[in-house]
Amino acid sequence: MELLSTGQLERSRAVREKELLRFLQNIFESAQRKEVVDLGVELMKLTSNMLCKMAASTSCSEKGDEAEKN
Image (spheres, rainbow, N blue to C red):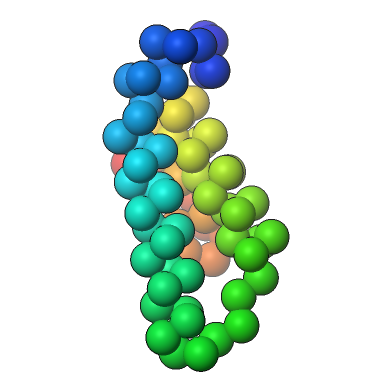
């Protein structure tokens, strides 16, 4: 399977958009609560979730460190 081919990237666009919106919402909510956010950790989760969902229809870190099947 070619995970990063042009066709596959176009087909997975909605997945990437959804994960990016989830990421931004989490950052916004943390900011409203005046919580410190480690962007490196959050960006790693974002990248990991995108790749997992694109490859296997799963999320690697929905809550905590547990994977979730979609």
